[in-house]
Length: 332
Length: 296
Image 1 (cartoon, rainbow over the protein chains, first blue to last red):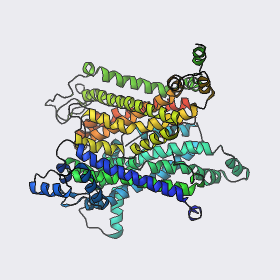
Image 2: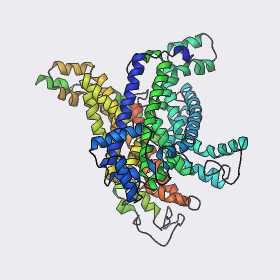
Image 3: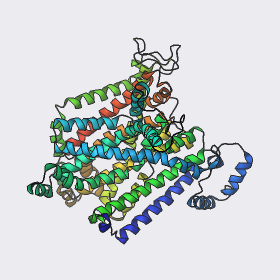
Image 4: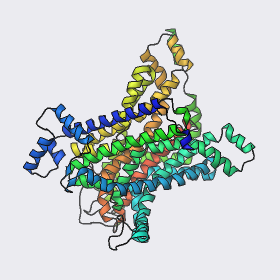
């Protein structure tokens, strides 16, 4: 289906590519300026606080810290573009490789959370919209409001105390059990049991958000003529709602959820803190605690760039799904 | 001076009047407003209400809730009840300051972009998009790490990241309002653009701006608590986020150290969201700001 529809307008595509590249460039410059505007010697931010004068000299020469700012910016830009984000003394590795080893854990956590919350949120939203202003609708709405208001880490702590510490149903911390050597299916099961509580925690906020969006979107779509036509054809109510109406209501949901990728990652940091999940968030906090600035700045840059990339992909998918906006303005 | 009297008749937003009727007689809403009033009261009179100094330590470490210490004590024997009362001060102060600051920037930029249109609008909107890119939580975290985490840096960083949402909303509202006939009438009577913007358009856009700000305060309070929770914050003040950060070590043995600050954050934000949600619904039954602002 998508491949038939997928004839992206060249102009729109080029425009978005150029726009994203400019944004990335500006972000790298902002990162550079932050390092230089911060109080103290920038060499500490690029090399960490080892106190090793020889290493500082090496870094000063490498980044041209004795040269004019524009030259320094050029050196910084070209090294970042080549994937050189600096060297982490704490991990004795390049920043890029430290970050890469942590990506899978965060991806597993966030993708599972989005998957779970999309299903739960959409079903709750649709059912609420079908029974507008009923008791069920109002209870679902109230629950969503609570989900929005409770800090995600507090939800995590609550789940941790009840299901891990008191009931002992799920492990409290980490990615997998370190005490046993497991392989294959048993290992997968072990990781899954570690995944349950963090994913539930992260999903709470998302269920609330997706539910509210779905409800609003469905309320609009359910009043449209094609829904009345589908009912008039004698289709079952389930097919009308989930087959016809939901398909049209999904587009705005996909965009908003996709554009909130940064929020998802912020949530992941907090959840990873609570459950000692060995992902990017945990890495960021460790870097913060150890004043490992190269890792901190590298992570910030990588996260911002990934937000731009995800926004780009969402816009492209959206324009593929809805031909009307292909030649139009950027999605507001 | 004829146009002045005419202009005064520029329509009062009728939506807000019908809205007020739905506003009344709602018990949950009244409860939320009462709760908000309670939090504001304890923030203002924290020194008078709190039975102990929230900073002062005692020998009674990690005591469960009792008559002397209603919410128990933490590891250093500090009274958690007093900490929760003083914490309201930090949360509300930061939430309101950021909302007001970013609201001012957002309203000015949104008004200009929406009214001027053309190149100015284009430029301002590209600028807005740029500020929306770096996730605010990470930006605040990095800046606090580099520049030190005082409340003033936190307020500046959060204001800088929050204004784009308001700017977009105001712009959209201005663009629809400026086509309305009462604005055209003001034009025809020769009112200056500044007068039209601030006397005719702005009052009509005010309800949606206020709703947005109320919802924003809740979001800011959550981000601030989250930052304090991961250890970034001003150590000169007792805040809910700091108490949560500190309490995490005792999660196995002393639930009360974390429970009461977490309850306080949740209740305050819930009350704000309930009021914001009701305002939002009063403005437009289709719920314009369908997407609440929750950053964590």
